[in-house]
Image (cartoon, rainbow, N blue to C red):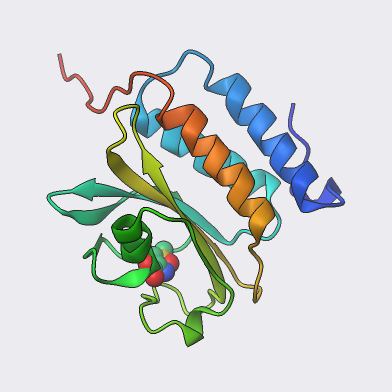
Length: 169
Ligand code: SME
């Protein structure tokens, strides 16, 4: 079972706890929304430096908010806007130490001071979403976050088949 965030002494241990839980629970699962919701929940539970976590999904050439945990997220982000848009455009992880100094940043909640946005690809190499983590702390994210989050999205979205739709019948 997982440990509460407060009991971790360092960030790498928190990611190891989170990813152990995520990998165990998502074993054999293929549904995209189920995966995104579970990842959000367990990152939020294990990472004490994370205030908002969620996915923006590619839809009709824009980013559209997907599953998230935290305060109200913007619904649509064009690719030429936001740190999320920049991550999608460049297909490179973006680490922003001070969002107030980034002219592209879109403020959904003024309490956010730093963020990391990681591109999410499927097994065919198509960009399907970005994963956004926000913090109330300044400069909360670094190469450790990047390493664990990139590996996490690679394992859960780019390593096998993905179901993207519900079935209503
Ligand atoms: N800050 C993001 C927008 C999403 S919210 O923070 C939830 C950005 O600049 O793209």
